[in-house]
Each structure stands twice: as structure tokens, then as C-alpha cells.
Image 1 (cartoon, rainbow, N blue to C red):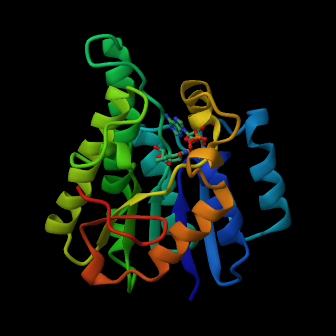
Image 2: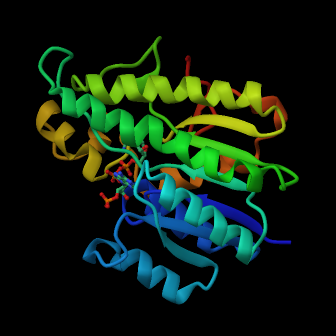
Length: 245
Ligand code: NDP
């Protein structure tokens, strides 16, 4: 039986790298979600899906309940179960607590926190049909209460990610048969992190330990593949190292 993955925010950045890596695995089917099926921004993903019949591109705007339910229905009809969800889609939320607009906070929470919750509510019964169900929330070290918040005065982003970490803990308690993971993908050069170049006065994120999307995605997938029930409610990075909550 195929291993069925669902990856959100799959048209660029780490999401695209995750789908690219998963597409090479012959026994894997990947549902790869994008916000707009007509956008020129999804060309690379469509080309990948054109070459690999195990990649299926679907629409999901977080936190739409309608999209999430339609996606779950399609997966139910086509393959009948789901093994791994990688809730990767997210937006930035820059600015200090008193300086960022309230919309910045609302938007970050809508996409980064409510989005994965709505998705989980729609697909958990499909996950329950898997022998090794995994819900991996792509969190961030920014959401670590111990080590996070920095860099870059991203209050809305950091707080929304800390909240999504508690959501992962909640899954582990309410659905003990589902392996619930919070994963930090590393500091990765994507559109999401270009502002850091100016902030740190550098040309390339590798100068401050940044990695490529490819290294991040391969690491995240390895961590997921090697996870079992003993890992539920853990917060780890793309190398499998523990990140303090
Ligand atoms: P990008 O900004 O490069 O990509 C974000 C993806 O999410 C895009 O596909 C985007 O779609 C999608 N997305 C944004 N808003 C929505 C929405 N409302 N509904 C559905 N999809 C949406 O991000 P990264 O690849 O850098 O980050 C991926 C994940 O890793 C995120 O969860 C991020 O918080 C986390 N992370 C990243 C780090 C890094 O260094 N890059 C560090 C720590 C954590 P579209 O193209 O349509 O906008």
C-alpha cells in the first residue's frame, strides 16, 4: 500500500522542496496544496507533478474549512487514508508587540495557528486509518518559549508558532494513536527569510548558519520517517535534535 502524504504551502520554499523529495519515492503519493491553481507561482510544482504521477496538486487556502473538507473528501475517494500530514504553509508576522498592526497578529494566527487546526479537524479520521499516522506541524524555533522569539522582532509570527506548538501537544493528548510532531526546519533561505539579509547586513543566510531548502526538506522527511509513538509531542529540528518548548 502507498504511503500517502499531504504537504501544505507546496508551491515554493520548503514546501516545494518537501514535495520534490517525496516525489522521488515510488511508493509515496503526495497531495501538494497551493492557494491558487491558476497562479504563475505554482509553475515549478505543476512541472514536477507533470513528471511524477504520484504528485497531486490541490487547492487549499488556510484556514478555509471548505477547502480542507473538500481536500479530505478527495483523498478519501482516491486513496481512502492518509499517513502523514506536513502542515507547512505559514506567513510572516513582523514587528514588535506594540508596533505591529492588529491585522498582522490576526493574519499570522489565522494562517499559522488556525490553519493547521482546521486542516487537522478535516483529515484526522483519514489519519486514524493509517498504521503509523503522523501530523507534523512545521513550527519554528521562533515559537520556542525558552529559546525563541528572536530573530527579527517578529512578535505575531513567534506567538502564532508558540500557539501551534500547544496545538501539537493537544493532538498528542486527545489522539494518542496519532504521532504529533512540532518541527523546526532550520534557518532556510526562502522568500520568507529575505528580510533577514538586510537585517543582519549579509549577502547569504549561510553566513549565519542558514541551509538550503533541499537540506531542510531531506532532514525533515528523515525525522518524520524515523518517528514512532515515543516521539509524539516532541519539538525537534531538521536534524532530529530537540528544541526546547
Ligand atoms: P515561504 O514563505 O517560502 O512559503 C510559504 C508557503 O505557504 C507558500 O507556498 C505560500 O503560498 C503558503 N501560504 C501562505 N499563506 C497561505 C495561506 N493562507 N493558505 C495556504 N498556503 C499559504 O515559507 P518557507 O518555505 O520559508 O517556510 C515554510 C515553513 O517553515 C513555515 O511554516 C515557516 O514558518 C517555517 N519556518 C521557516 C524557516 C525559514 O528559515 N525559512 C525557519 C523556521 C520555520 P503562496 O506562494 O501562495 O504565498
